[in-house]
Image (cartoon, rainbow, N blue to C red; front, side, top):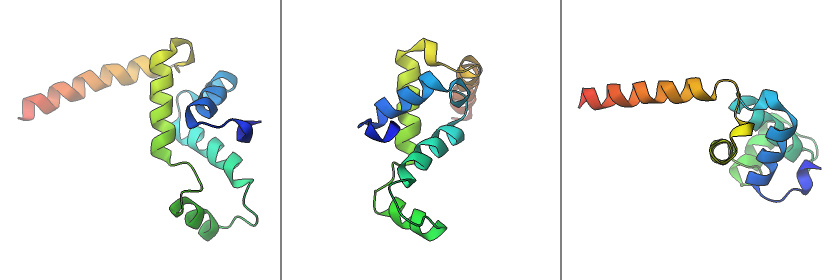
Length: 101
């Protein structure tokens, strides 16, 4: 089913809706998408994965996490338990960066 969904945004949203434990873990979210994409490749070995990644046959982790952030911004019901905690930390980090300047 996931492979039939065309865009990264749609695939990420589909996973976030069905698997709430992925809402707080970019690593698990990326791993799930890559797992689905690797079904298209025969004999997946570490080198095969790296080659496919380098050739753009596998969605980048950046694209997946960017899609997750945008979806959670637009759909509060798909936010994980750590969403507010992360955003509160972001405010502190920004303040510390400003103070460094």
